[in-house]
Amino acid sequence: MLRSRIIGTGSVVPARVLTNRDIAKMVETSDEWIQARTGIAERRICGPQEDAATLAEGAAVRALAMAGVDPVDVDILMVATVTPAVPLPATACLVQEALRARRAAAFDIGAGCSGFIYGLAVADGLIRAGSARTVLLVGAECLSKIVNWKDRSTCVLFGDGAGAVLLQAQDGASGIRSTHLYSDGSAWQLLVAPGGGSRFPQSERVLQEGLHLIQMRSGNEVFRLAVRAMEDACITALKANALEPSDIDLLVPHQANLRIIRALASRLAFPEEKVVLNIDRYGNTSAASIPLALDEAVRAGRVQPGMTLLMAAFGAGLTWGSAVITW
Ligand code: UT7
Image (cartoon, rainbow, N blue to C red; front, top):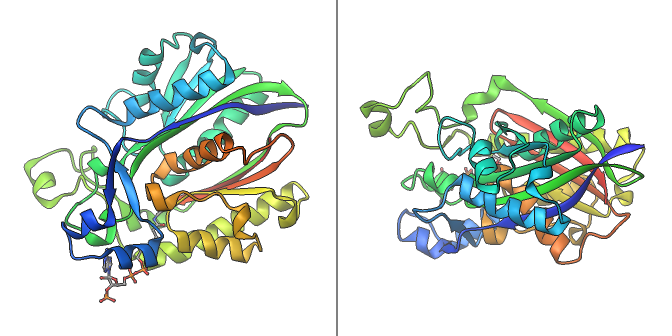
């Protein structure tokens, strides 16, 4: 059977570390509160020369090197991001130029923190339809540049980074087995950065009111919705593949909050050693979080041929989804 197989992974994070104690000097918070409520100890922050395109390029170079594939052989290049390097054109086009992936069709995926799972679904569809043989999918974010550093309820959560996977059409049992995507636009206002688009174009007012920055309403409600939605998406994925939770070797969840991940794992009866976690070091890197966690697990030798991986994400939109992969 023709499958989309991940043949390379890569990731990068900026060198600058921002600890909880650093943030406690900026807003009324503490290391204890942040660790207890989110599981985050530190996050990486872009320098002035870094942006979503430069991070995406770094992650992509590593994924291509692991796979031993020349950039010119990439048919499709997708960047999942909510923090594009420039409003126009797509960040994927800047990455295409940097990689000299001159044959690739390049475009961005905007699906909040679920962008990587959405990208996997698009890549898998294009590969299995015969429209592409080799797809480079990157999740890349510079959330530090759209975080409101005066808002303690959000500024502690986010970080910067990028992760990439290189997918290729291959016959056999390894590859993407399923993807399931969901959205609920009725709750779009829960997690927004409303300014700077065509509804509220960049203006003095947008800047003064900080409308270009991330705002989250009812973090508690987002928390509850995230657990329920990811659980539903995982159960649907397991059923679609006739799998039991015990058949899954590794859960690679979106890293938004350690308590969300633990609640999900407990509802699915996954022991913590089967869950890939790096939220303590990077915080929530939105569309980058799953490929960043995956790449770390691959390079640490935690992912072996024949293993079955379950991925689940939830984010702004609202959007959520799941994927099952045989490695
Ligand atoms: O990427 C996907 C989308 N995002 C998410 O999945 C995030 C989902 N939500 C969350 O992770 C959690 O709701 C938060 C981490 C954002 C907040 O944790 P919580 O346990 O839900 O806390 P809370 O919002 O109920 O706030 C509890 C208290 C409040 O004070 P009062 O009203 O009880 O006096 C907040 O003002 O904690 C206060 N608080 C803080 N205190 C110290 C909020 N942020 C902070 C802070 N430091 N940074």
